[in-house]
Amino acid sequence: MEVKDLHKKYRNGRGIGNINFDIYPGEVVGLLGPNGSGKTTIMKSITGLVRIDKGTVRICGHDLSENFEKAIRGVGCLIETPSVIGNMSCYDNLKLISRFYNDIDPERIDVVLQITGLEKYRKDKVRNFSLGMKQRLAIAMAIYQNPKLVILDEPANGLDIEGSKELRRIISELSKEFMISFLISSHLIHEIEMLCDKILIIKDGSIVDTCIVQDVKDIGVSLEDYFIDRVNGANKKSIDSI
Image (cartoon, rainbow, N blue to C red; front, side):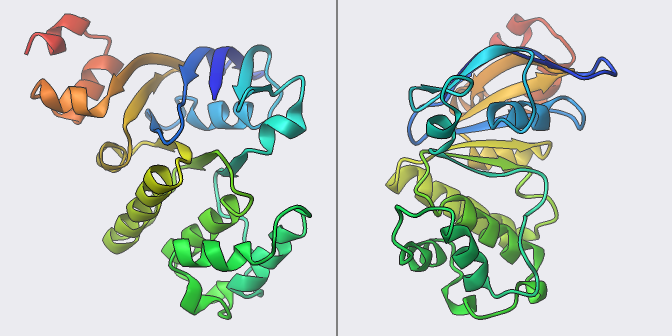
């Protein structure tokens, strides 16, 4: 995905501006910033859930504004809360999703259940699922159509240690083995550090810095300190000189 000069302002004056970044095949990119910094607006803008004021979004070579269907065909997403139906089984939730894709073999349901570790819960009612299991089901729904890019908004919110570890396993497997790219938002810095290759630091609707996680580790600075330095507007050399 290629995002250039993306702008979206709401009537209250808040929003995002001058957003530029790329995501390459198999790359896991994090949007890291305080609550209200614009992370969800960026995600809604690049999936067509809100109308942008200006800018360009290209997904798998297709311009979102010029050929929305082809561009969004390669995207799976989970924004805000999992859209699952509690009185239906895990399998039937996926069966419902499958009806939107005539060109995909329904047996794909079995594949995504295996990837997300939900095979043995296929007949269970979703209303009895823990939050972590609902998140896994939402990811299964997001990857059903074999996307090239998956967008996850605060996927670790409310998860316990075991649930967070399982989420990281699924994302790592999908990115490394299937070359699926991820854009993940969070305000949980340690979760982002363990999940992502690259991080976009967001403040007040703008990207104030882009960093490679391993590069930050290599200079002997914690990602937490690096983040605070950038958000507070410190001179870049103050970190790089350590």
